[in-house]
Amino acid sequence: MTIARERSALPRQTVTLVPMQIQDTAISDVKLITPRKFGDERGWFSEVWSDKVFADAGLSTTWVQDNHAYSATPGVLRGLHFQKPPYTQAKLVRCTRGAVLDVAVDIRVGSPTYGQYVAAELSAENWAMILVPRGFAHGYCTLVPDTEVLYKVDNLYAPDHDAGLAWDDPKLAIEWPTLDVPFTLSEKDKTHPTLDQLPAYF
Image (cartoon, rainbow, N blue to C red; front, side, top):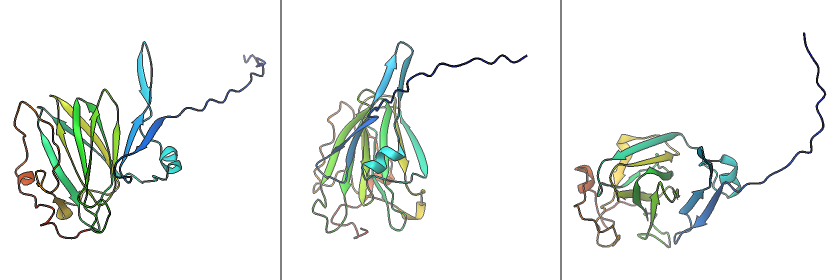
């Protein structure tokens, strides 16, 4: 037996929420993005990626892969990494557990900010993300134990085009954090060329 119930016509409410804040950095192509969190006694919800929001901000990108990295201790330094053409990558990086200092270096020859960098702290607490465009070397250093970083890329990993830039190049003068422990790097990350030694990939 089916009972038909008449529904009263309720007025529709349109609520416009700003899901994230998008800010310029000292290098305008690098963006600092902070999604909003909506929470109550149960926990919280956060929209961390929206194709429409990014497209409306002129940042339309097609992401093809998500990467997830865990670091057990403070002082784990990963970078500075990039992929050579034609497999260059843009990245959208966030920290979901712990905290990192995230760094993006402009390696686009002829750019007015060539050799300059942007650094931002990303953490589970501040919920910020950084958009690293193609033509930048990227890396980060963990600030606390048990840190997890997630990042989207707009091109697939191409090991034959994997490349790097020396994290400690004096010409870059990156202000890495001062920690009570030494930095921990992979053997590969200890041997990347300096900016002056780097071929003009971009």
